[in-house]
Image (cartoon, rainbow, N blue to C red):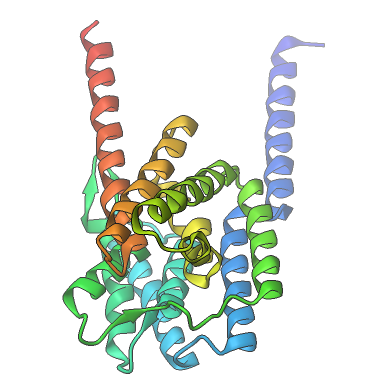
Length: 287
C-alpha cells in the first residue's frame, strides 16, 4: 500500500476509535452523580422516617439558591457552565443541617457556601468545604436565628445501617473510604480519651457518631475531593487531625465541634500542601 494513502486511513481510524470511546464513556454512569443520589437517599430516609426537615420549601430554597449561585459565579469566573453535582450536595446539606424558624438563613447559607468556592481561593484552589464554611459562618454570625441538626433524626438502628452501608459502598467506589475509616477509628479512640478525662460513659462519647450529622459529615464534608489534600497518607493524617481538634473542642464543651474542627484543620492542611508544592516547583525551575 502506498504510505501516503495509509497515513490518512490510519488517521481516520484513530479519529473513529476516539469517537467510539467518547460514545462509550458517555453511556457509562458518571461517578459525580453518586454522591447526589446518596445524599438524596439520606434526605428521603430521614424525612419519611423521622420528619427531619423544617419544611420541603426551605430545603428546596437552599438547593435552588446553591444551584443558582453556582451557575452565575461559575459562568462569571470561569466562562463555562459548571457541573451542578457539587452545588446540589451543598444545597441539600444546608437544607438538612440548618435549623431555623426563618426562611432567609437557608438561602443565605447556601449563597455563602457557593460564594466561598470562587472568592476564597489560593493558587486556583478553594480551601474550605463549601457547605461546612456556610454552616460555620451562619452558626457564628447568626446564632440567634440558626442552629444545626442534632438529635432530630434519632439513632434508630435500621435507617442508620442502611445509610452507612450505602455510604461506605459509594465512598469506596469513589476511592475515598480510607478518609472516612481513618476519621471513624480516630473518633472512637479519642472518645475513650474523653471518657478517661471527663468521666462520662464511653457510650455517650461514641453515640454522636451514629447520628445524622455525622452521616453527612463523614461521607461528604471530610471527603470532598476539591478541598482535601492530594496524597492518600496526607488525607489520613488530616482525618486524624480533624478528630483530634474535635476532641479538644468537645472537652471545652463547644457545641458545634465537628464543624469547627473541619473549618480549622482542612484549610490549614490545604495551605501547607500548596506551600510545599510551590516550593518544589520553584526548586525544579531553579535546577
